[in-house]
Amino acid sequence: RIESMKKQPPALAEAVLLLLPLALILVLGVQPTTAQTPSISAYPSLLTKSGQNVTVTWANLSDPTPTDWITVHSPANQSDYIGYVALSPSETWQEGQGKWTLPLVNNRNDYGFRLWSNATGQEVLVAVSNNVTFENPREPLQGHLQLTADPSEMRLLWVSGSKQGPVVHYGTRQGDLTKSAPADSSTYSIEQLCDAPANLTVNFREPGWIHDAVLTGLEANTSYYYKFGSEEDGWSEEYRFVSSPGVGANVSIDFFVYGDMGTSFPFYIEQDQQPPAAQTTHWIRKFLKEQLDSSPSLVLHLGDISYARGLAFIWDWFFEEIEPVATRVPYMVTIGNHEYDYPQQPFKPSWADYNTDSGGECGTPYYSRFNMPSPLYRSLLNESRVYPRNLWYSFEIGPVHFTVLSTETDFLPGSEQYEWIVEDLASVDKTRTPWLAFAGHRPMYSSSQHTGDIPLDLHLQYTYEPLFKEYGVDICFWGHVHTYERTCPMFNETCVPDGEPAPVHIIIGNAGNLYQTPWIGFPDVNSNYHLQPSWDMFRTENYGFGSVSANATHFHFTLIGDNRGQVHDRLTLTKN
Image 1 (spheres, rainbow, N blue to C red):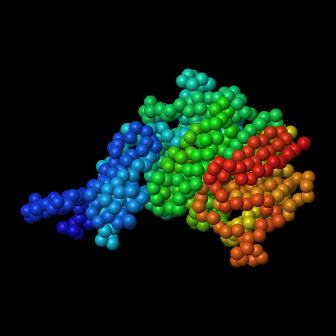
Image 2 (image 1 turned 120 degrees about the vertical axis):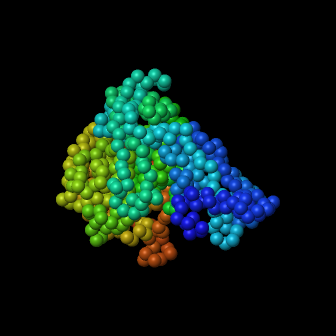
Image 3 (image 1 turned 180 degrees about the horizontal axis):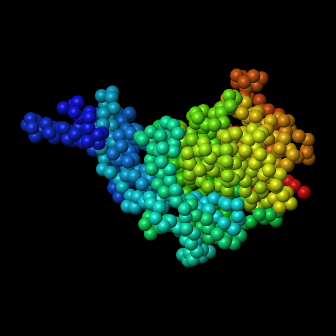
């Protein structure tokens, strides 16, 4: 009988195990004891919207231990869990009972919870909860705005359960959405992922249909109200954004910049987690809420976006986390190693620290879920499993021209990317956009001890620093290293004399990821004495993000700490 049970599907086997005591009573005449059966339940079992709280209650757990736990499953009948939580934080765990309240993200699947006991020294499943479902699993969600090459436009992407008639309704008055923008729809499959763990069925989740609409005919610096969805899937709530202020030296902008944020969860997952991500989004949301009549012009996320790394459910939770921000301001991105790197990637020189960091995603979710104003990548069309985008590109807003580099694909002289970037930098009209900002994931400079990256950093320096000098790049934003660091205006690892043009480098990969490498030792890398290099103006391991204000003559940067939302560092660049 036990052998036959092993061959049953997991859900059926669990049901048999739970019913076995009752069967023994009926067949063998065994008298029931006074001990009650452990139980676990979730309420409400029907959720009306994504992010709604559910309360999980357990009871009658005999011989409770600090290592008893609850696992979270989605879909509910899947044997592998997406997360878990220990019971011991509950004040009543020693009584064998307690409650746990958490929000659930609508990922177009149901949820279930399982109770595990460690009383015997081995984990034993003792109870399975009821399923929790969403009233509308096709609900339109995950809205995120993005800039196009035209300042009179705004792009919006979102996800829902079908591709029937997706559209955005928008207008300048709340509740009076007189204009419409139809959306194109796409998705991706497990076959378009390149390696494990992403292409294992246990880790893959259908991403839903990803809709892409462009809102046109927008007046500059104007509030627009909008909602998205379809008659089939239902409609989102009504959101608001402020259109682009336009491009020009006479236009002022504000924006946020950070890298390596990731996702926070109300439970533990089988990946390293990024709890500071919740604080980063908390403070940005707070600043946005305080600016009721205007908005910062964009967010620039410098790679290592969600840290899904092959666990597909993480993408849904990430977009749920940024939704209050990304539905308010355009969310611009660069590609990082945790979106792209995989064993068969075409550009993989011996000196580059390219590994398996995407978890087999090989750029597919990143390409599919964002749409930056990208050129056609001819060299990657045959390599990519979906249409490649969001690698290298540029855009202009206010007095700033942004040039974005992909540090994960071929960036050397002679490459398609290099030739495009030279052409882009040469095209900048400094009378129109006096500030030239350069952005990418892996930094050229860092005093953090990440020795595996040093050869790649040097190749970036040798390749692009001459271009920075030739075309007058003012500031460079980088992520990848999970600390904050600001340099002097520098060239060739040397601070330039006052008044001589050279870019300031800002490494701001401290928005969420907990892994931090120590500072480089002095006088050698193994020393415990950490002396700042001469070109390093300020550095910190505190978590936070950057806030920028720019006009024709001033470029103000501040580092905002996650702990209290206070300023930790300031920089002002000026032009005549």
